[in-house]
Image (cartoon, rainbow, N blue to C red; front, side, top):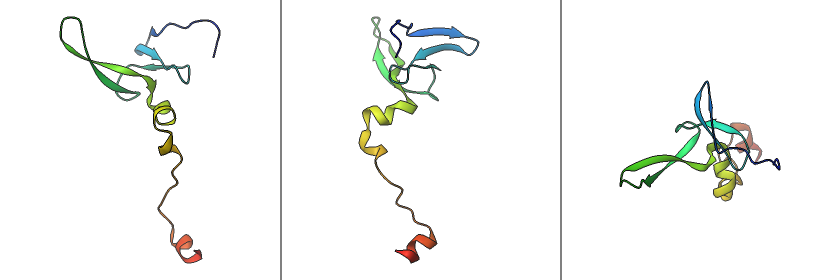
Length: 82
């Protein structure tokens, strides 16, 4: 990571983008790139806000056991060889 502090949000031609604190890259603030979390505003309204980790980093950071699993599906050749 850089020593200089990057802004949390930037505005580009794609719209508002948020900085992922794990991969240190900006991604558009929509549900395609982020898991959205419900939060309550000061006025009492429920808002959806992006999580701190993008979807690409989420499993490795918050669900490390899922990344260690291997694919359980075997091909016909693997079934015969085993």
